[in-house]
Length: 82
Image (tube, rainbow, N blue to C red; front, side, top):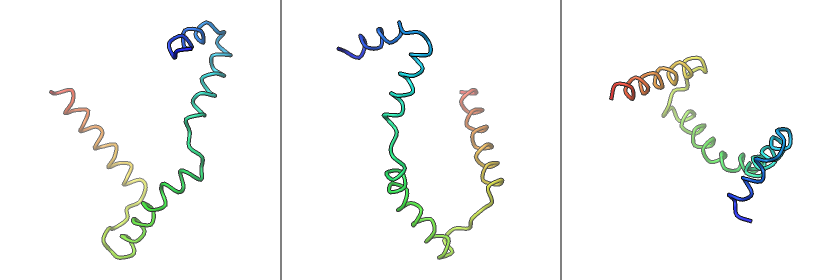
């Protein structure tokens, strides 16, 4: 069965059954916690080393969030003006 046929068939299901199918399909794409932790380990080690060596200065979460939100606002403004 092709993906298009499967999707067409799934769309005929009642809403609760479609939700269950969607949830199971999405969860099949998730990586395990161990895989995620293993993937992030080198990055976390690099960041910790940079802080310990004084190469970067950590900032608090509120400041980081504000900087991210301001950057997003600026990007959106540039997109709408072009």
